[in-house]
Image (cartoon, rainbow, N blue to C red; front, side, top):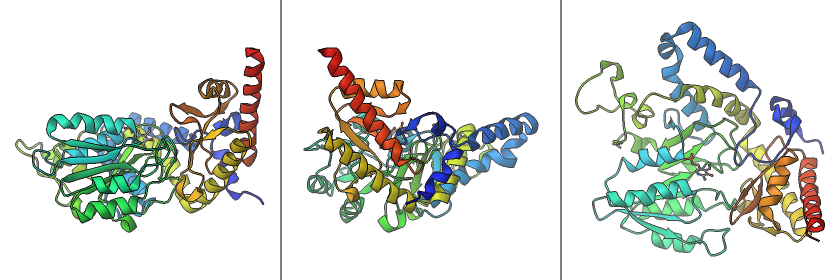
Length: 388
Ligand SMILES: Cc1ncc(COP(=O)(O)O)c(C=O)c1O
């Protein structure tokens, strides 16, 4: 059957030169980024400081809205930041950890940067409760739900686990959190763009992530959705003049918070990264996450079948409904195999306790999966001969 999504391939120059299976780390760059960057430079060169008023000041909210559409978030509910770690800091700064409700619950399968941030908040009174994985692939839902109690303030968890691609039951986590008065900060870095996310359906409090992986938006843009009812009342202490009602009044004294999304921003926004993000967001919106997800389930199943036929350990869920866009394959000498694959222009990565991560996206041809698996087989054979 013809794969209609392959018609987007000419829009991504690197696909001509490499076997690109690394969209879980860095999505392929759309051709349109060249034009976007040229336009950015032209505007700066010709409009100078007027660019702020004419385009740059509003860009942060516009890009937030373009990301928001992909997760069914209403206009004005998504602010943009440099990365997910900064988003954690913005959220943390809305709360007080000196009271009895100061527990922060997550699992050891969270992305480490997020954990480093929350570990460090212990000096501000946060009490971290970390639930451990049993199998290195999943998060024990029962234990996570049990840990969320009346003293829990925040639950910062990944929707899709970066190491294994396991999809957590976000709905169950959010329901339990709300039952006891806690708030969930859902990290959708590894889901948005490949697994459907619907903030209204989930009734989630906060969603964070970035555009550089599945959204093909390049480094430098993180996003933070705040549920509109919360957005009206929260007062981030990590704040700045972009969050002021009257930024250009340069008032002295305490801030007067603007409405979201600017309420959750702080200093001058990262204009070049915002401009670079746009072409990728446009393409993802056009392709549609439903179609991306269907293809992803099929191709990741194919990869798993090929890896299992060869007796390699697969560190991702077998059930496609519980699996995001990545397959982690821990073949022998996985780290060296990864290096050799990169030398051969087969782009993947290696993560400890995961193995080689392969991540097809909507632009991936089925043949590229066979090419990658055949290359691994060949590398392992060559290594075996070299050892003898
Ligand atoms: C689930 C998840 N969260 C966060 C990050 C990155 O965090 P930051 O944007 O702070 O670099 C990654 C990967 O880079 C990730 O996979």
